[in-house]
Structures are given as C-alpha cells and as structure tokens.
Length: 203
Ligand SMILES: [Zn+2]
Image (cartoon, rainbow, N blue to C red; front, top):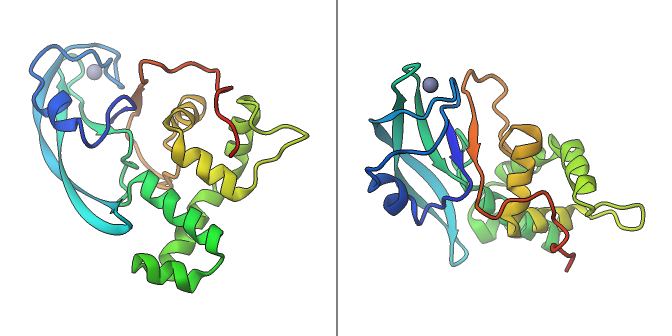
C-alpha cells in the first residue's frame, strides 16, 4: 500500500488515474521503481460536507511491481487504510464532541450513533503515548504547555504536516487500529516536508 501525503481526494483523478508516465514511487516490498498499472477498485469513504456526513466513492488505482510482482494500491492522505471515515472527518466529529461536551447533541448533529463517536475516541486513545512523543519532538508539548485533548485533535485536523510526521516517526497511519495486517506500507512525503514544525501555534 502506498500512502501519498501529497495527494488529496480532489486531485486523485488528475494525478493518479489520468497519469500514464513513469511512477516515482519505490516499491514498498522491494524498493524497485518499475510499475505497471494493475486495475483498481472502488473505495467508499465518508466525509463531512457543509456539516453533513456524505458517502463518497473513489476509484483507487493499483500498481503491479514488475520486479517482485506485488501489487500496491495508492491511497490519498485522507484515507485511513481499511477505514470508512476520512481522518479529518473523524477528528472534526471528535472536536465537536469535546467542544460541546454532549454526546447526545453531537450524535444528533451528525446523525451518528453515540457508540460510533465513543469508538472514534477509543481509536484516538490508543495513540495517546505516540502523540505525546510526536508533540514533544515537535516542541508542541513542553513543561510549560501541555496541549489538551481538544487542542491535540485540532492541531492534527488542521495540519497535514503533523499527520505526515506521525507516519514518518511511527511508520503507521494515525488512527489505524487494524492489528493484524501483512501489508507493506510506504508513504510518499509532501514536497515541503521537513522535521521542523515551529510554525504551528496553538490557537
Ligand atoms: Zn517490488
């Protein structure tokens, strides 16, 4: 699986589906860069649009490595592998919940069961120690300032850069909770990716 952080849902068609040149991705399994297009599949995902949850579809392209014969799907940055909700949608729902402090109101606002919202929260809690490490590394967590849970969620939702740093540091997609997978991951960074995160400030 190739997760391309420079890609979003919106430019997937133009940059991936309509691209017929040489792919620059190294194969996650063998590092070779010799690909053939190898079909694809339709991926459903849920996103927030004007405050409403909507079901979207995306045609995902799969590549075949001519060297090792493994196939790899290319995913845009918002897709949690094997997840239905886009990462920003999931984080925004949690942010609303923590803001208004009412599971009933949040559930009604998004027409979503409270079990689902608590499940999102539980998914995030699995990552709490990794997030603390990441935030310390990026100087967003200091003895003088410890971000609250809502600040953490807000920073993650607003900054692709932080989500990408998370992948880079832990080799795992944030909020991915599938425990057993034999998939090889590879991520393609955005052009501007660096390790400095100092421009991000608390609001
Ligand atoms: Zn390969």
